[in-house]
Image 1 (cartoon, rainbow, N blue to C red):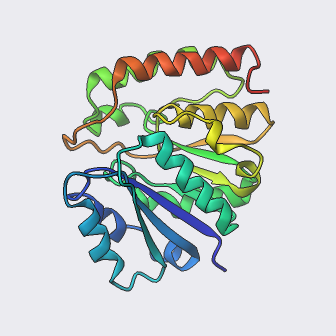
Image 2: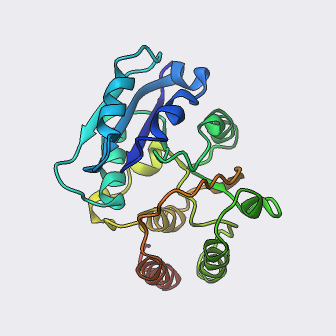
Length: 242
């Protein structure tokens, strides 16, 4: 039974993309309806690497979408989730193309979602002590993330240890309830999705994942992102996602 849809936000990830795709477990590939690589107008060879990989037999259909202009992370996620909804997949996985999140954990994520009837399962780099430090996450990201998570946990009912991980799995029943294109076109879209899920009474959990930083360049503006996150938290506190 093919019931998993994986979409890969990809922007200037030509060095990491091939090894990431190769690390997707075979049992996940056999259950995958599609792996959609979304190139957000990269200026390196990301599109070429994706195209080369798509020509090889991966035991799962690989599709590529390339934007003519850079639309931003939130727009990529909106597009990926909308295609996932069209596919009618039971489970949808967002797997970042830079290799920061472990593709080999997808199997355990899907298994837990099935067993516990989970709607949103987020990978946490802080669930295990010193995991982020051992994975070479920059200190400003560790403490900045912890500060924002502390405030968010005050505003949200569901308490999580790492609200800023982009490794997320969703159930179809959750995604079909929301208007994706009313969400942020920036990095805070992940926080918004969790806010909506909580307001709808969905089951939200987290799963420990290893941290993997290898000096890659971040496209995230820390200040504007932090302000956006605080705005989402405030709106959730006062029921604006209900």
